[in-house]
Image (cartoon, rainbow, N blue to C red; front, top):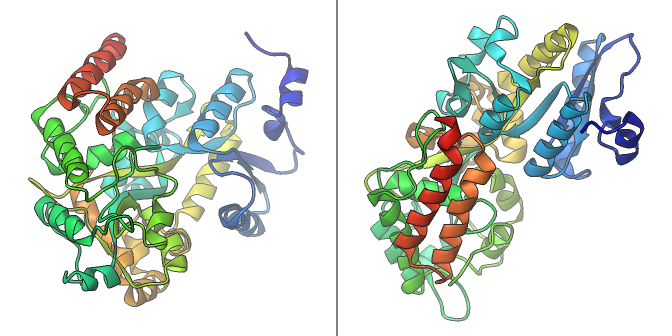
Length: 417
């Protein structure tokens, strides 16, 4: 049912997208962050700088909370006929946005072939669907391992490099653990449970879904091996029992309660700024191979945008994703600069020269896999999250939990095959 426009305005859902003065083409875009803080200041700064160079275009960022909140607000506004021009949403939201007929592919929005080819292929794979490119990489990440060099020295480990294999990681984690004081390693199991698990599965030589988003592969030998390894870290006392919280993992590292952590490169600037000790950044350890899923957000262009707004959006996106700005965004936030030529800019070269750890996530792209993404993605990943958390807390037998998640998610996907 379509709500009356006066109710939408009162609820705040449509207000950001009300028509503005006709003297300029206005681009409204939803951005996934709570209002306030350094990220909003950066985005506002980009918007004002772009407007200063493009007098006929007005850029209006609308800060919408979490990625989930942002997706919900975009869907609600679109159904009410008040869609934003663009939104930054997860790369894994592509199937949902396509199935809801909310977005248009960028390869059909203008002369974009050379521009789209300038991004790292690993960051494009999640949104290459049905022969089209539906998303433009912006704040993208992979999972990396952070480690405390002082604690490595304390227990006789080489502080110049992180553990390269699962066996080395497990051995180091046991050495680094100190009863009632710190854990050797911490792999978050809330927030993005499936994402951390996908890294382990990739390292074991497996995957969690097919390339078409129509079938999941949760219950496989690689998945069982990955979960068994995660649980073995608990059994050895090298990692906390139960669930490690996503939101507190960086603080646990900064305050010395965890000697190693697995988390997003998006935490790099935070840790660099606040760590009171020397730390290292390493690729995730390998089993059969190295591996990490990509993550983070893309720009999407909504179907409701006018022709003028589409043209203006492409102008803005090519501006904000230029090598120089992609480099600066990476330096300022810790996200991975999304195109190779960004790493050749003077700003990025100087940054990496002074802080070589910044290049680890870029180098790990060689082993990156697309983040788990399917049709009806949120509902399909939920059974896996639940199964993993049940296994990690001892509420379900691990292999049975994976089999149950496989069966539930397969039923949800039947209509998409």
